[in-house]
Length: 320
Image (cartoon, rainbow, N blue to C red; front, side, top):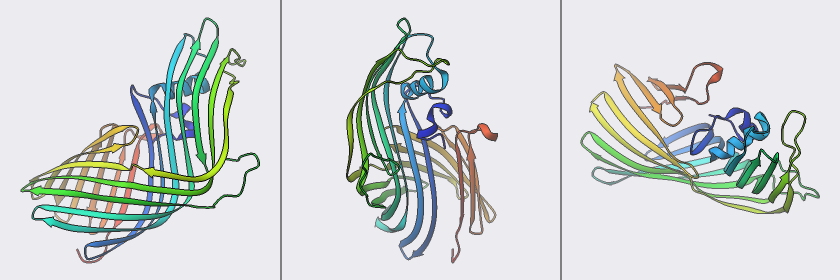
């Protein structure tokens, strides 16, 4: 899945342009009653996005030490994570011949919320051995320990929506869908807003910068309100035969862009075999479904060096 905020400098090997690291963990139990599906679920979500400069600076300042040459960076990074549990409802509709739609609601009781945003220029002058920063920093975090902190609500609430529309014509189908779009609220959540400006020549004996920032800003505790933009997915499928289905899809993630995937599914007797390739993650996945049991696994490389993994296990019981 990639590294999260605390370990980004040592774990990420950033690419040109914007980068993303994410974690999606979910445990769900569902029951279908006609066109509706009711679920109980537990979720652990985290997403980190940022420019290559953001992660290069983190590595230079915290892992590699002082650069040998003058450098400039434009920092623009966002991190958001939450843990919660709740219930979900989803209903399918037949809009017209060849057209299907669905809509759902998900209510979560949040036990953890963490987010930060970091944006601004930074530079190192090798001739003067001098660092310069002018960075704006925002943090809203249930782990934040403020001076003279007041008690705050022990949990937050999230109301998320999902939905989509699918069109079929013969062996071809196309769909557009969204998920996790909605609202988040947490009363009295600790929040921090700072502007970090510094010009410093101090480095330690190992060559790592010693930050001496002028921090302007402060702490406060207000009710946190967030509008979640969610993820939009477009998908195109082609049934090459009654047993073989090809698919191309892409998730659009806020602050990053598109995550494309190519996939194929083939039925053999009572089993269904599948394979997928996630383009940005460079992850190859395989799966099998047989008599209600579904297993899938994917990775970008074998062993401990893997930087992207996916695992899914499910069981469907009842009438087919």
